[in-house]
Length: 155
Image (cartoon, rainbow, N blue to C red; front, side, top):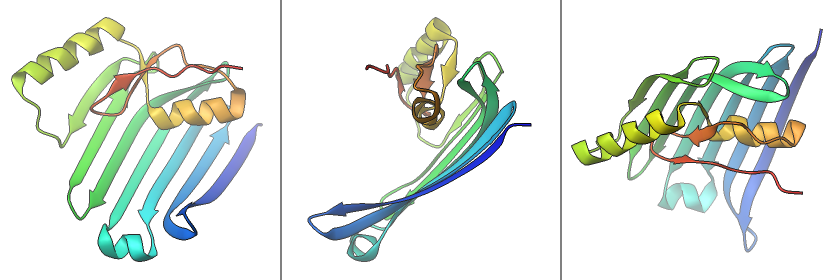
């Protein structure tokens, strides 16, 4: 049985000032994966602009592709407290879409048009981890709650 745990920690520094910490905890099993991703302000930055973003993803692994089933992200800072909760089918269709950001009717219509046009989605963190692990693109558009976009791997 295939199983792997990857735990990464990074510091974000600027001109020798430590601004924030990033933690990735990636758990891979034969057919499924989970990712915990945390960005948190540190030191002086924490006193000026306190920030913490926590994202949890669980999904399936198929042919070197990470397909999320749940994506839960919560960001809290001195200026905002937002969340995005998305549930996907194994094929990548959005089953549930819950975000804290208020959007007007025009934005909602445009968002629904994009969702109906592209239909199959992944989340940004699963896509990035997939790049690191398998050096492969996703055959799906990326959605993070508000934005829809694509990333391509180039050699």
